[in-house]
Image (cartoon, rainbow, N blue to C red):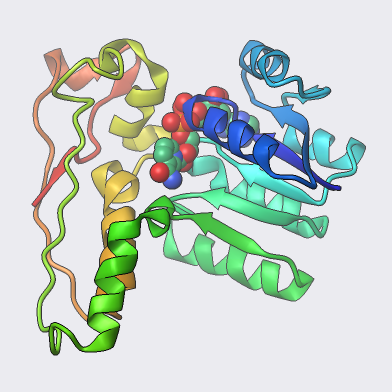
Length: 232
Ligand SMILES: NC(=O)c1ccc[n+]([C@@H]2O[C@H](COP(=O)([O-])OP(=O)(O)OC[C@H]3O[C@@H](n4cnc5c(N)ncnc54)[C@H](O)[C@@H]3O)[C@@H](O)[C@H]2O)c1
């Protein structure tokens, strides 16, 4: 049985818990969030026995083989490195890290320890991307000279997923001080990954970034909304 800990128990962690629990031979044995109530509620909902607010404590006390890192972006590197140091495999959410040197450090640490440090670029699971790659690989569309890719996401413009002004899970994504790289970290990494997975290595990327005014003084609940929210 592979024992997994989920670190970060916000919105996306629900998906991790649901899917890990569907995999035979895999058991989610611990949950951790810096917000204790969030971790407790999550553990109760998914019947996870051990609950922590400190990942180092969790890793010292619970024998796990792998850690799913589903924290907000800024904590991906420190949490993953804590797990890798103890020889645990890591399944880390995108973006792998918030800087290139950090990402390289994680990759090097995983290599040294002989563990997997995998990043959840989830569009790799989509049939359309696989078909696009097969078309390119087979030569059906000839030599690819230029790729245009877009990804439209609506949480700033609609309330389908809730009101972004009221939810920390949206607000940190709009704030550099909360470790966000803005739309580049949130969506750009997906675009680059699915476009290059389909078309092959891309030598140059162009995009224009924009940060629209969204609130009075561009501040909401202690979050300064300065991370780019749009890219073309
Ligand atoms: N692959 C995908 O398609 C996809 C989709 C959605 C989100 N994500 C990624 O998943 C991650 C989480 O997103 P979310 O929407 O769940 O955000 P969220 O804000 O809802 O949840 C993040 C949680 O991490 C916790 N946290 C922060 N630092 C921590 C630390 N050091 N230790 C333990 N917990 C910590 C926060 O308290 C929060 O509860 C982000 O990196 C995001 O980019 C990926």
